[in-house]
Image (cartoon, rainbow over all chains, first blue to last red; front, top):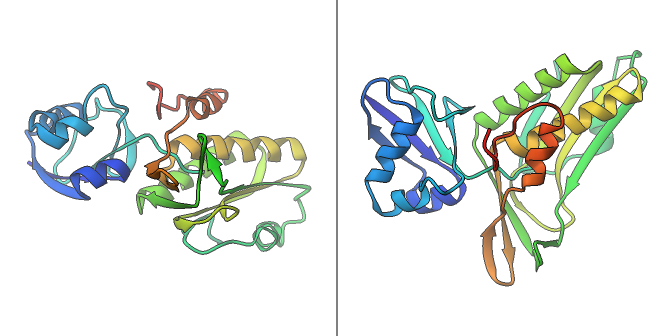
Length: 83
Length: 160
């Protein structure tokens, strides 16, 4: 299935604002992050497991164990710093 | 019904917002508000300007959910949140949280709860311009701890 991945703040500066990713049915956010890391290069660097990276699924903060549905909107970003 | 959440580039007027929030509600006996402003120093460096990025759509939804949580948790009558985005300079206002209640205790608590929630759960990111160049502001463990006081795992910098 195809899903849209968006990036914000420092991740957006490195990876661009969005990309479309082909993913196995029922993959979790963790599996998506691992797949992106496996592409190497900048993805591997900024999504590294030692880094604090948060994610959302369909515009709601999500745990990486959450499964991704067809047509979902996923985003990865650094810890938030508003207020 | 008046908007509860605004994410905007333009400035806001605390007096006008409070007046609108309590208008027509004679049950209000207390109003608590918080205004956050841009400091000219952060983490040891001067800050000449700040740029605030957010996740349009998700930001508004996240803050609406926080207000719902505050209304369920505290005996308050109404709440209003405004957060600015884009370029801001030192002394500019960034964020407003205002809460009305019958009595002060719940208003103070709900106002602090909303700010603690917003700091770690609303998708905003600050980039500041310093003499050493632009840098993204680091999240603080203390902000996670502030939300955990309310029994909610923040999971922003610390594991949820």
